[in-house]
Length: 314
Image 1: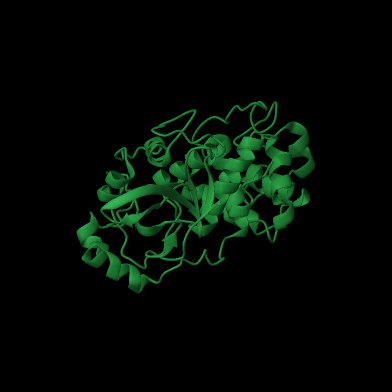
Image 2: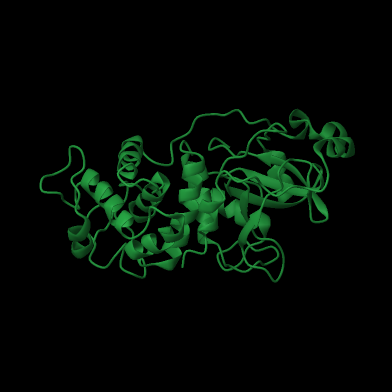
């Protein structure tokens, strides 16, 4: 339970330092490190938000009632349970968020009664069927369960969801949303897919669902968000759009490794500052790995060669 909690802890922490500086790497690659020569450059084209604006406003307000509770946890639970109100509550091994759950967050009658909170403009008396009340009540529930502290957050989420896999999904997506509140729909969906793949074995040439290689995982993750990517890491890098060297990464960005931009051999997907999910090699499961601090830094026997930010229009 909660073995993805490290994503929440690393927010704002500096990433792993590499073995060589950027200047040395630029000398190694020459003009190939110029984003304009490596592939299409990111345009920053707008896309749909990961969380509807009305839900985000409510979630941010609800989180303020429990100092220390990340708003992204509320947003991630809403996304996992009912796609932030855009779909019927999910049905998992536990029968939804809880068996017999009601409303957009699938509150059980007992859980809602224990934490019923009237949100601004909500129903009176508070109702699990009212979105405002449900979100404010979720903040109260998690706060009472220890969610205001980093050490108690995983247990608090589990006490609501009662599904270990959903807890992992929520923790990873929450870390992404807290790092990038404006995260777009395609990136959030890809991050959530990657979180759901944690623990699945590496299989060379694997495209899922029972095994992935690095590029197979990335392709499947973005396909779930409606973005079509090429199959292998080199082609995925070439498809871009490539971020300029020195740009800060965001959740959903793809990070590439190899000996140069024309010899890319590995790819991962960023889920939080300094953290990626990847399928590393035979004998290892899909997992979280630390990112080097900068393009040009060493990574094992290779280098961190660049970053792309797939767009929904691709």
